[in-house]
Amino acid sequence: MKRPRHISAEERALWDSVARRAEPLEKPKAKRAHAAPKPTPPKVEAPRPAPLPQFKVGQGATHRKDHDLLPSLGQQMKAAPVEMDKKAYGRMRRGKLKPDARIDLHGMTLAQAHPALIGFIMRSVSAGHRLVLVITGKGKNRDDGGPIPTKFGVLRHQVPQWLKMAPLNSLVLQVTESHIRHGGQGAYYVYLRRSR
Image (cartoon, rainbow, N blue to C red; front, side, top):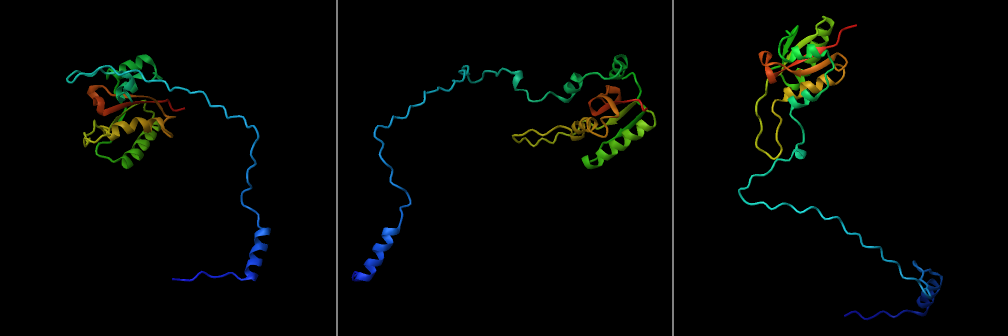
């Protein structure tokens, strides 16, 4: 066992001089004579959600339209405003107008299809075509059954987006799904602006 060390008189004097010059890190707080108590904030109750209706096993669930995240591609195109002549639009939708040119993007990847589409639209405008047909195919169902559904037909969904973006958006007047005689949901009519 170690014996306690005794402090010499010199060490004690040195310690006392250091202790006199040292300042405390925190100054002691002075007591307030009559401090007013802090007011308590009023209690605010959170709104309660509406109670859920009773559900019995085997009962069919009701479909609520406000939960639909995105309308189908066909519904989006039908809801788009008609920019071209309404009579010509009606004839085009019924398959009465014959396309001046067509491009088939079947089997292409997105990286191959995008430049091919841009080149086709640019050549069609310079050739003076008004109505062209872009064939994408309906696509294959590649949904693996996971929690997030996979889009059906990648090119089918991507082509309308490309047609709305630069440099094609200034050349395209109207895009709509084609009539069944020209491919139905697997193709698009693209009505081009007049070249000036």
